[in-house]
Length: 88
Image 1 (spheres, rainbow, N blue to C red):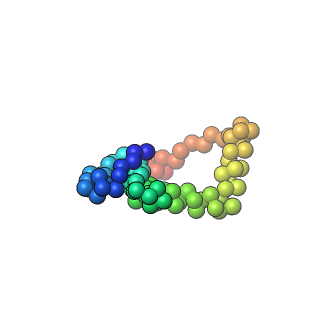
Image 2 (image 1 turned 90 degrees about the horizontal axis):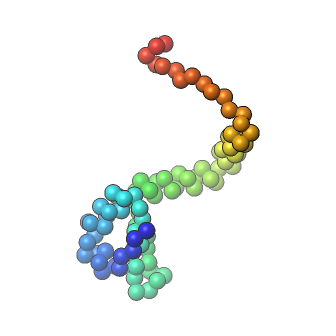
Image 3 (image 1 turned 180 degrees about the vertical axis):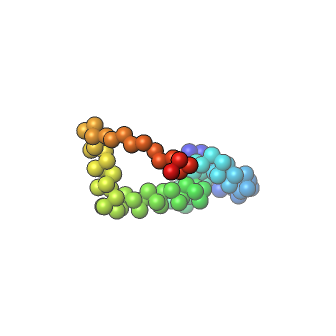
């Protein structure tokens, strides 16, 4: 993750926005006071992070994921043919 100071970020705002979106990587914007530092990330990355947090906070979904992991680890896998929508 790259870091840039506030003054440089402000001068090249458009370039840094493009960098964050093109690389899908957050950018740290530093200030004189470390507690004022911020992290800039793309909307897509933010949405993905929020979705992950929602899934992780849902006990039902997490149990389904854990059950899937247990099945894979126990080699209880089943191979299924894909349905070809063109060949009803």
